[in-house]
Amino acid sequence: MAEALLEVRGLQAWYGPSQALHGIDLEVREGEILTLLGRNGAGKSTLLKSVMGMVAPLRGSIRLRGTELVGMLPHRIGRAGIGFCPDDRGIYASLTVRENLRLPPVIAAGGMDEDELYALFPNLAQRASSSGTQLSGGEQQMLAIARILRTGARLLLLDEPTEGLAPVIVERIGELIVSLKARGYTIVLVEQNVRFAASLADRHYVIETGRVVECLDAAALRADFERVAARLGV
Image: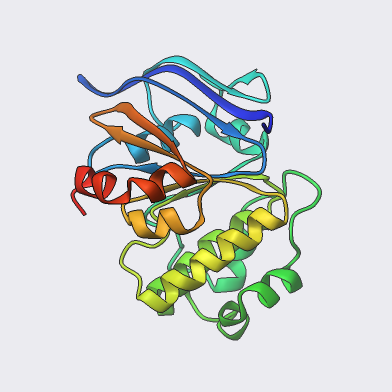
């Protein structure tokens, strides 16, 4: 079994007086693709934002390679080696593709250079001088992922990367995620598309009302797909 890269224990989170996470326990193993499955409002995105230090207050523990992240400033968490793609993609409309790509700092050796990224995402090479407002949804998602690949982060948190995209683009994103795993990246993926998740992830956590209710490996999800899909309302 691969070593745990990220460990979350007893995590509770609030938005003002409303509690969003109720004692989440999970671990992410080095080199795996892991999905967080659940309906809208289940707490999946809150969990990723909590890892990044973007939600307060928090109780519990989040450890990256044994280092406690709770209480650490978000920019320091990013520099510890975590890349985050939010569900809104975070593309700056007033900047070109090239400027968006260069915006985050390089935090570690081993990140992809611009030539590698343009080879991986040919559409971005063709649109390098275009502003963020001129990109399609799929191109924005590719740019959001490319941007964190440049930083050198090895743990990638992707929040709903397929939401609102055409099936052909969803397929392309899936191929990209599998290729990143082959390069040694560890990926945590928030998804509502359970068929997409089942096609590529090693393990799956099902989250309901801020709690983990199931943890399934790939084979278990495939064997019990209809029940899980019904539970998720898809």
